[in-house]
Length: 265
Length: 296
Image (cartoon, rainbow over all chains, first blue to last red; front, top):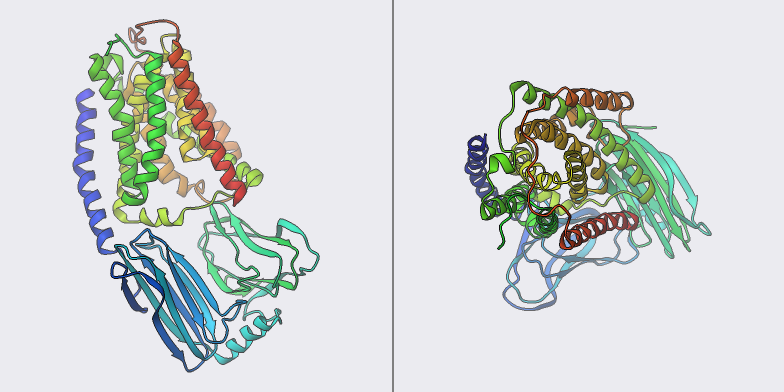
């Protein structure tokens, strides 16, 4: 028995150590995983200190959805600012700020924004230290009708759901004081994809719409800063999920739309 | 160092405290770097198995008698496997109910997506499977049923497996508060087997069967999905518990394989101090989870 146990332990080591080495090697090769479809900027952080250094400047000839993703193998925090010339639909300010730490492999910091025609730019503030920052970006021209719909939501006309989405909740947020109040519950089956669109016109106070269930949770789908969460598609593990609202001293309205199995319900 | 003829409760409590602390500290430092699967291997070999073997070597304890690292009958081995699967169903049900209640009372536990993504490679999954089904049953059984239970058996065999089962459950607070009661139930079951058979092989097989069930039966039976336990488990859990108890009772008692005793009969003060520190530490871990849930 004793010999068998130690033989198993040694055999496990003989199998496990090469597996760990292979895993480390693969992780080293795949440290940065920016998909092919993204154009890529690689910044060597070890050359000099940077204060709002312009990394990228682009001109959009038509409204577009701009996806950006960032990865870095350096744990030091770097400030990346994404600045649009006019406005970013769903945001109060025409800029986004990211604090990027160590994010590698399949993890990344990412954002998708909808911009009207015009210029946008990316700036970096960082101290000199070893490591790299990789920024991927991609522009997709947006359907004019879709842009008009999102612009209306951005202007405060929230009842403009995408095709196939059904309203499950709407409320005037003025005077509403709630903490994690369940506003919609849904039971998700295996492999089911749920589409969620949440819009708010709140510009003051505190608003947060979250979705939670089992071990999965999505926090701050919208807030006073990020007012549009459009067509977020998720395939969570089967189970019960709840959309919750937290609201205090807010103004404006809130609309929640859901799409299930390609059809509104 | 003063040698002892058999494990003492002071040694058991000190090593348990050490293992509980380094498992957490080591995991926090290593898991983001080496992944979940490889980290489990480090936990099992370095923090759990090594201290128990080191103490045995320093004190010249024979592993077959002191840690009961010896075989048992084929019948006992088969019963251990079946009891492992059966009691796992009850434990999985308790775990789901516990998670559900914690989610309702304190909110959902935040998920560390960055740490999860590091662990997602196929190599990590293979390491995790081998770690859970082969290494954990061997290393944790040597530590808990071989070393700690032997130390506590100086009072009585029943006291030995009950205390060790509870310590085994408390150790699993590092996997989540909801795992404490299910792991205690499994721990008491494995402790009873060792107490009855005088052999770690029975609890190792039980442990392997339970972990294998968690890996494969859990997803297949819907016990790994989010949300409340499937309705059939309300009946299956108590039935499995009864079945497991019947199986455990049917294990052949091995004659002349009672626990060892040695050293002092009373637990010295430092043993109590180590145990108190461990309980406070594990309680703090549990409270931190509750706070994290409330903040979510």
